[in-house]
Image (cartoon, rainbow, N blue to C red; front, side, top):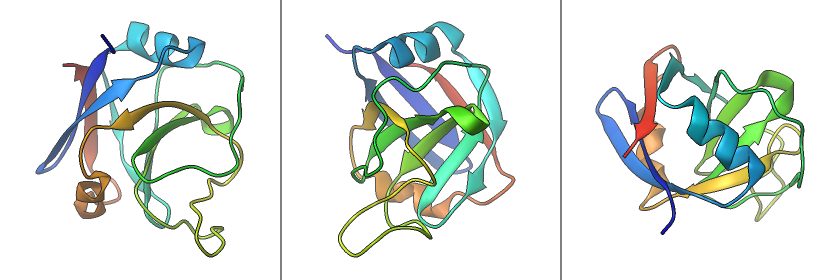
Length: 123
């Protein structure tokens, strides 16, 4: 059974499943944590207390993917186009390790505001 986490920010709450990867394991071990949401196009990201190297970096992701971005020690939630996306793709600022996926519609994160508190915990 995959490990599940709960992500909360303002009125938004979503469940996600973690993959079986070293990055997901490091994030699981660091839970719970809170941070301040930042937005970049249709992406919410925030710094977390995890520092791991890029293992299987992806330049293109899918809506609902959770990614770890090493330069900012950041947890990223992708739900649509970013400022560097090309037609038909979702592109992070630079390669991320995809470590999980939002279980339902990740579009709920569109209502998360820059500067809002965000909490991640084991479900």
